[in-house]
Structure formats: C-alpha cells, structure tokens
Length: 132
Image (cartoon, rainbow, N blue to C red; front, side, top):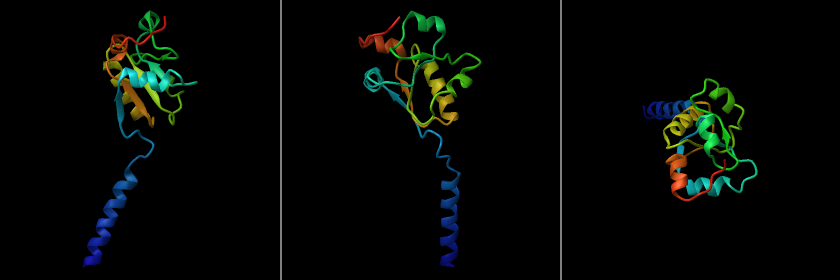
C-alpha cells in the first residue's frame, strides 16, 4: 500500500513538472531607470524597446532604443524578430504600456523581460539623458 501512494505521489510531481513550459519567462522584472541605464547604456547590442508611438519616440528616447509601438497591429510581428534568449528591456511614458508589452513578450516565450518602472517620465526625473 505504501508503494502505491509513493508511485501516485511521484507521478503527480512528474506530471506537473513536465507541464511547466521552460521556454516561458518565469517573471517580468520591474526595474528602476538606474538599473536600465547600468544594464544597457554600455552594451553593444541591447534589446531596449520603446513601446510608445513614433511621435512620442521622436520627442525623446533612450540611447540605443528601438521603437516598436505596443498599440500597433504589427507589434507581435516586429518583436518576434528580437532574440527570445537575450534580455529585453521595455519602457513607455509612465509604465502602463510597457507593462502590457511585457505581458505580450512573456506570452511569446521571451526568457528575460525587464520593464522600466515609471517609464521615461521617471527616467528624466532621475536626471538621465535622452536622445532626440
């Protein structure tokens, strides 16, 4: 009888661990503007994505960022070109759209997702530089 419970328990553990998708991000990390700066500003090829509109991007953006607007119909198509195995950093104006974008990236199987807390507003409040 003890063996039966042991086998059933082991089967349940194996079942749930086998169902876990290892390709999915385990969490979306909310990080400060300074942490984004430290991670991407001296990097050769950061995956830094500004998810605001083109007009907002042109008003000012982070150095080395690319503009892929989360509200555009082709957002998923464009971000699919990014490397899912490398960290991707997203930001917007205040944090709402980047949180939405981060969820989409998680659903698409990106392994490391970092969302900048407070968006570019918080970035500028910290005195960090932007590009036009």
